[in-house]
Image: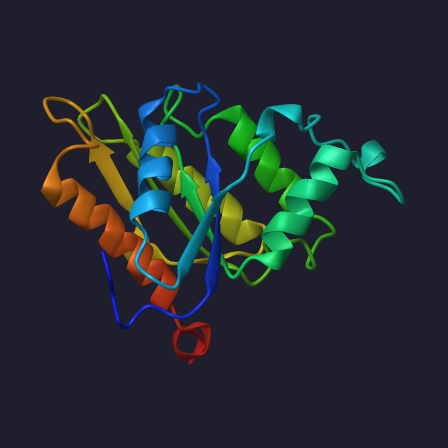
Length: 188
């Protein structure tokens, strides 16, 4: 798919809330990375399972290597996309832990000022809306600029999320909305 309005060279890191290699949300993130409009570079962050649970005692002069790698990758990106299912009515613990690491140091964490969007799918009628709301709230507290118009909560009941053209168009539209987000205009 080609989009002449896409920003040139926009780096978007993708945090996937499911650790399962074959999860539909991971496959959705991979599909997005492959189908991203020209000028958008999506990079799926691996290694979230390697992060120790956030503990301020570990967050001193020397940060655990997996946490530093995560912080560096997010800090170097232009945007953050979270692709996640819903676990027991909220976001997966691995994602919450990643946000905790990215929120520090307070006021200057890697998420601070980064435009962020959330999308995903679940086999429930609501498509993960509760988890997506929790991610948006937690990321906003961590300093991210949540792009509300780029949220997609898609039910996977009775539809193949990865093969449905209308769903693909919605998630690519959300990705483009995230990429096009103008922080200065939204702050005015």
